[in-house]
Each structure stands twice: as C-alpha cells, then as structure tokens.
Image 1 (cartoon, rainbow, N blue to C red):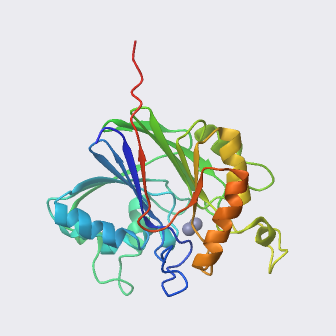
Image 2: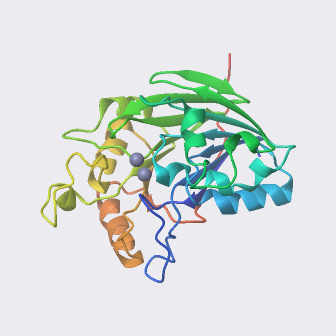
Length: 284
Ligand SMILES: [Zn+2]
Ligand SMILES: [Zn+2]
C-alpha cells in the first residue's frame, strides 16, 4: 500500500472487559496496528495483540516494530500470547520508555517469570531487540518517522506520532489533561490526520460529579480530546481506552456528544480500520 492503514485490535482501558454489554466495541486492552507502506508498527501489547499475532503468523509477516506507550499491565499483558514471539524466524524491534525502576526489557521480563508465567522472555525463539526512547526523540524506521512526547500519567507515558508519505497518526493513550490541553500533545498532534486519545472518562466523572473524583488517576475525557484535536488542527479524533464499565450504548452516546464538539470523531472499536491516503511531499 502507498499510504497508511490503522487497525484497532484492542480499545479498552485498564482491564479486559468481555461480555454482552461490550461486545460491539470490544473488551480487549490496547493494541493498534499501523501499516506505513510495507512497514508494520504495533502500538502497545494489550490483550488485543493476541488476535493480531494469529493473523501475522498465518501470513508469515514476522517483522515488526512494537512501540510501548508505557508498561502498565493493560499495555503489556498480551505480549506472551503474541504468536510471532514463538517463531524463530520472527524479528521484533521493541521500542519504549525506560521506567524509573528498570529497563524496558527488564520490565517485560518481569511479567514472564515464575510463578506468574511459565515461559521466560529470554527463552522466546524470536529475535527481539530493545530500544529506549525519550521525550522529544525522533527516529526513522523503514520509510516512517516516529516522534515521541512525554505526557502526564503515573510513572510516565509516551505518545507517538508516526509520519509516512505525508500522512500522520498520533497515539496518545493514558494521559491526564489537567486544566488545559497539554501543550506537548498539541505540538505532537499539529495537523495530524488522526489523533487517538484517552477518553476514559466524561468531564463530569473526571471532576467527581458522578462518583469519586478521577483527578490524578492519569486519564482524560472526550471533552479534552475534542479540545486538543481543535487546537492542534488534527483532522480525525478517535476516542480510545474506554472505561471497562462503559457499555456499548454508552460509548455510542459519548461518540454522538463528541461529534457536536469535533465533527470528525469516532469511538474506537475492535476491527475499526482507518485508511490514510499518501500525500507525497515534493522534495523540490
Ligand atoms: Zn491503560
Ligand atoms: Zn497506564
């Protein structure tokens, strides 16, 4: 393909939430596949990565770059169930932040040790490489440029922008907006085609008008997402990291409300595909 393709495999926050109330949106935790020409990027390895792994294994597509926003369970727990890691022909570049406590590799190893998991990271047959990225860092991978920005979340989180052939996607999950749209995110998402945003709460829930206040919990709202999208000039807003208690009709209601603020808004659901046409910039 000449442009970009974004496919959502897991859109739920905090913990997988399968069941009849969530079957349309889906209950798997975060995993987003981005194809940039022939290069494949996977954003986070929540439980949604399991099905993606089955597909890649069946297609023999065994080279990929896995970008971690951070190392909370809902973003890493699918990795031991990602089929390509058990294939010795697979080459997986793992990119993410170094936490205050330990390296990226050590953190992923942590969830693959006895007694909580029977296979060790070191014993995986696939060739894994690790790379730490920091706020403001930008690097080229295949034909795409990846840029990272640090946002507000307990323990830290990185948002990523992927630019390819004049098209761009920003992945900003697990972030608290605080009072104003975060200037670091507004910068990162400037004129992006797609902004994927943490819309875990409504503003009323965030402020504690319904239940406990969620201030300081590290997540944002669809209202803040619409403000960021407008301020950054991002074309399409994707509401992401839905609260595990949010039912399908509630997600649909939030999507409808958000469209009144930012017309091109969609609530992420498993299986959603966005295609972005290439806009090759003339080098001359
Ligand atoms: Zn999360
Ligand atoms: Zn988190």
